[in-house]
Length: 264
Image (tube, rainbow, N blue to C red; front, side, top):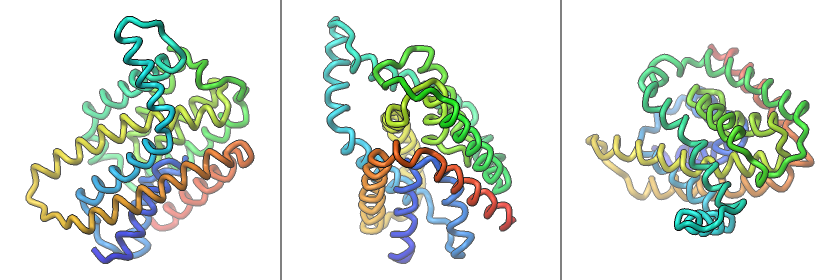
């Protein structure tokens, strides 16, 4: 692929991975608008790895404390808010792992239709708007209960359907449960870490089992661009979230869905 294409694809992946606007819709729309060929599995791996580095770096302080308290709890120590948050992230990842293993082939073959992606982009945009408007937005991330973990975990499994948006549906669920916008986004982004690790591991195993020739320079470019754009996206999103609310992202989802329908 040409360098401008690599930059564009990596930038789009980095931005849309964490904004509640559906990365799958963008990654289908971009080649159709430009006429570019499928970028291939190797570039998916590189882009996901870049976004993983970005979210880990941004939340490095939280992660360090969470892991320290979690290991202390495993060794018999008293549970703390941070150790409970670590358990919440791990258990909320379970549904998407189970459903991903059971329905991966069906989703890949039957649910990547642009019309389905357009419908889910618009439909779950409405869900995001309602959750933002109707949620009490009073609870912090430290108040998350096991009931919340179950709801958000199964909501995250819905993101296996293209167009749903993993960040969008988990933020929607957390807002509906009464979390503040900042707490909902923080929990969603922490949840993304094990999901991206699993997705990258799966894609890497598929890549290693293929005969694809790897252009390491191109892959490094994709990883760096995806990492930088994702980190900047998280930082800006977390800073202005309370002020902006979810309406701009909802309107964007409506426009994206309408554009996908118009292109069919």
